[in-house]
Length: 432
Image 1 (cartoon, rainbow, N blue to C red):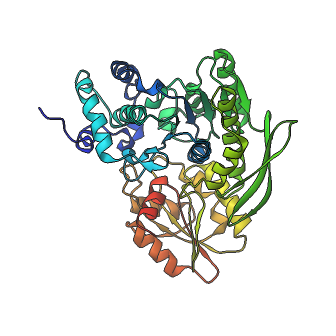
Image 2: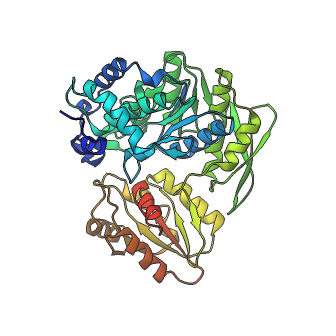
Image 3: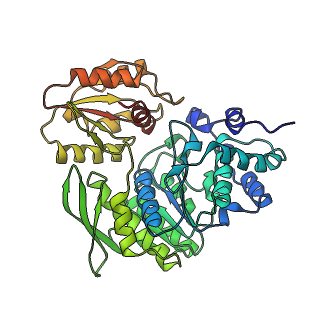
């Protein structure tokens, strides 16, 4: 029987990203099957050193900064981030370029006989297996890998990384990860490995305590941004930000980033501390390479500003903490501009928590819906927005919703597209 195409095979598998998360169970997240597959394939995930990144907010930005710095240092760099509106295969990137479909198909053909030996595969497990194997076949020098969901039970957690990184933790995926910050943090801290250095971004005290306890239990040296490392903003405008970072009590190092918003200062410091840990772990990354990589790094759809009129901002904020960071950025860069909001969210999101910090800035809103299967239906979203005190028009097509918002935007105002990484990615793809 011929090997099917990789996209067709993935389409035949259960896709947990498309499932109602209230119907998921622990049985949906088991690593033993994937470990057996990778062992039979020669454990490709251990063919290169890696950074493993978990958290709720800022994972993509930290991955983008680290990957850019490593590439500037002359390394061949694999990068895997998720989600991607075009599908998870587009998240498999080497030196900034998505992996060619023909190469991924060749990897899949190598793995297919091994996949046939076990049952119960899910979409993301197979994507992870293909990603790890592709990076090995592409002979990357280092990989930067973001978890898909949670941490401890995520398919990417078959890694034994050189450094683990945990970005800010907030309430998200509570049906799976738990209703308290401590439970969520315990899942995220599941990426910590015995003796492997872990770098934590600034955290809520509850999450910080869980991370510290897990690191101590496993003998994993813990570095905390805000304690062992510190950063300060020096200057910011719409072209980027200048900051300085140092190990506490040491010499300041100045850096420039193109990523906007005060929250990106902590993300940059977290990435810097992670790269420093890599450097101490035997993978040299010079200060010059970090500076060059940080200045070159891009991460689309994170407070990404498009000149108008009207000015249009794309931001993938999907949690209350991300919405607070978005509000702070709006106030810093556009303090007096009236905002027309285009909002789409996944059905499991804390809509009230997401909306609360943004509501004072919004003049009008348009509810929409991405192509992502878990997206909240647009009529339901419009109704829930009205119940929260924000009457909204309903436009199911994101491109049409953005166009309507731009047409309705008052002089001097701006259009904000937010609420979902999927929605923002879709808006970027369609050139809105």
